[in-house]
Amino acid sequence: MIRERIKNETAQNHKDVEAVGFSGQIMSGRLTLDEYKKLILTNLMLNKGFEAQWSELDFEIPKGIMLEQRRKTATLEKDAKALGVSIPDTDNPLFPADTYEAFIGSLYVFEGSTLGGAIIYKQLKQNANLSTLDDFHFYSCYGERLGMMWKIFLDHLNEIEDTLKVDKAIEAAKTTFDITKNTFVRMNQETF
Image 1 (cartoon, rainbow, N blue to C red):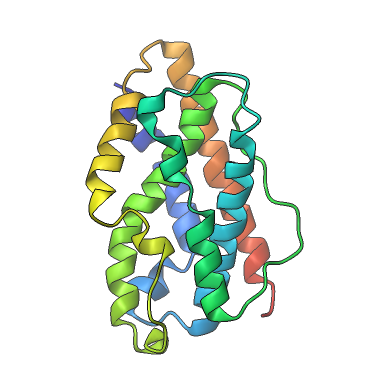
Image 2: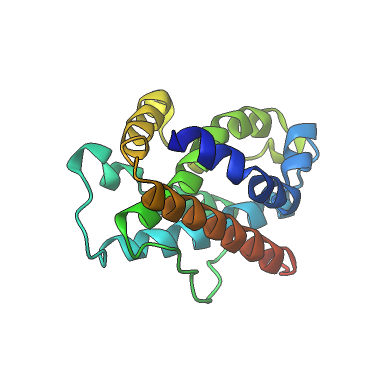
């Protein structure tokens, strides 16, 4: 089953992203306002880049996947505006999306991040360094629909059964994690 394979085979890639994506600071409640700004801007660049590719796909996305409802750029722009930070003028990264399976592999990383965002949201709300912020739009973007949106995504992911197509989805997920990690590393060097 693809769900177990993709989770197991990308586990190290996921850890690598967490290592550079402020995971320790978030979970310990030590995330600073400047680190939060980098977190939002990095996620904005990543999501904006991926979502820009959606209009150029050469294959059909099933309507049931609710792709338009999965856009997160607007919530990230709200957070950036609330933080008073401008969006860096850099090229947004491109993700594997040349086939449906590659697209689903990339989407796995983004949707998994949204699922983990529910835990991050709770930690951010308790962080004294961020107490001046009214809301965390990105990390609560699905609200009560979070479980439903994840289940819908998994249903579509699990429809991929052919071994070569599963391999393609997993390879795309790994590449997406690596692009995410490299974007965080680059943005962590920026000063805001």
